[in-house]
Image 1 (tube, rainbow, N blue to C red):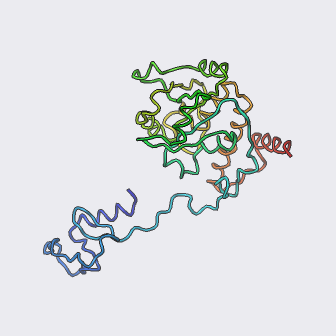
Image 2: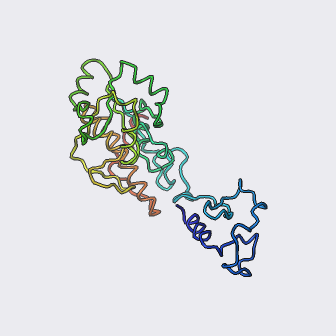
Image 3: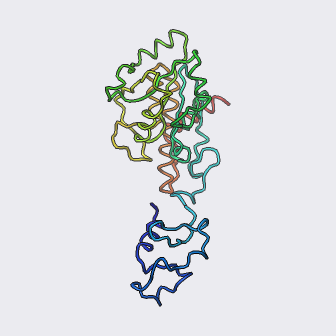
Length: 289
């Protein structure tokens, strides 16, 4: 609940808080006001919020402004222009593919790291998660036998233990001339668990838990545990373990630059001179030219 909603609810819980457009609250004794006698017919309840408990109209909400909404951002990378990510964007090829099943709320977060995967690996697919039915394109791809999809999720519950595989299944798919696909549930850990449990169309797929000693280096959101990697970090480790080392290294550098640049921008600090990861990515772009 926003601060505005909280203030409005507190005001309507008190019988003295009669709408000032109808009754002068300073001239009315709170014990003498019959809430049912207040004229509400003059208020268009379709355009004004009302409190369901006392049915008094509330003032219209102010326009919501998220934290960082006043920052001037690059139209392409969405980072503050002081530390634009665009000069460091590189691409890479990988045998395995990443398909992102993204919670709807993640699309609006500039700190989302799933988009970094798409920047580096152009074959990456992005689908919005729906509980009742899959994206039509995703449904079609799941039926395409060229691909060997794996749902990336921890193996910490017994009810799907028979579906759990390890990285050897990924290598086996490659040897069978199929394209391994890592389906990453892109959202918070709570959202990811709900997505896994509420998506019946994923129930037939093998579950691949990520086994790694890596601890998160993501600084833009606070994880519940250092073992909880962000979406880009999960992809990096999967690619590395699957044999796509070059792609993993480029994505890792790109993630590091994003992480450092965004964190510095929160302090209105421009990174100068470039970090080691920045220099490596700039060198790759110079080779392309």
